[in-house]
Image 1 (cartoon, protein in one colour):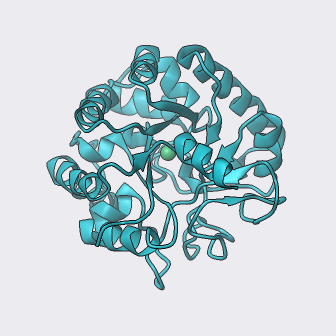
Image 2 (cartoon, rainbow, N blue to C red):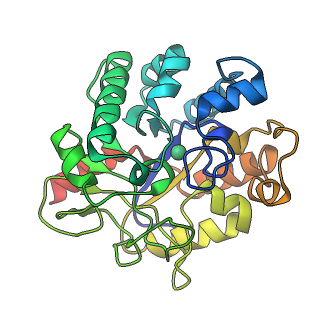
Image 3 (cartoon, rainbow, N blue to C red):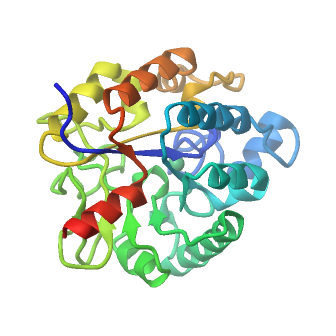
Length: 299
Ligand SMILES: [Zn+2]
């Protein structure tokens, strides 16, 4: 079955230690990224595992003439400014993933706003163009998110996954549409606001995440492909994944079995599954801002 609608493609340019099990969530192993470097790398910087993985993706996208959106953390931009410039120079969209990979619900609105402003300015300086899109770390959103990102000049958010809520994630999201929509007072609300939401689709009926590399690794490529094909009959869909998923960096010593299970099928297996998904949407893949332009024209 050939999908009738486009697929927006995005990459969250996170390192493995930005996963909620490692940092940024209530039950994380480390308090922040600095503690990861001290313990795992024995210094004050990461080792740079993300760089070859991101370059591999840039080569794959160039070969397939794909333009994607990269959601980038301010701290990642500070560690690897050259990588951000490379991504922008290759014609991909630079979007913002916050300053650090922290659940925003653990921050005050003021602290979140100050961090986000800093990250956006940093990315705009490196990209040489305005940053329009935002995605919340861990897809955890606060009720004031829509107000803050509108104030800072973002035109779309992509933090909604209309899944059933579990372990503090996807709260109040199951009622959200699977296709892009104009938001209301909150990013979960539909409305007439200038801010758009570009959601990450879930598996039909079961309402578990599907348009994410994490689901592709844990449940298999068929899971993501079936869900995306289902929703692509009625509107555009989105798929996103992380560089660490298509790479296979060893996890630190002492990593528990639950985390190992959560991090399964990285590397070549995931490269193959991702390539299969991209092939199924050949000629219909777009960046998120590219999709938004189409939606605004049609609106
Ligand atoms: Zn992330």
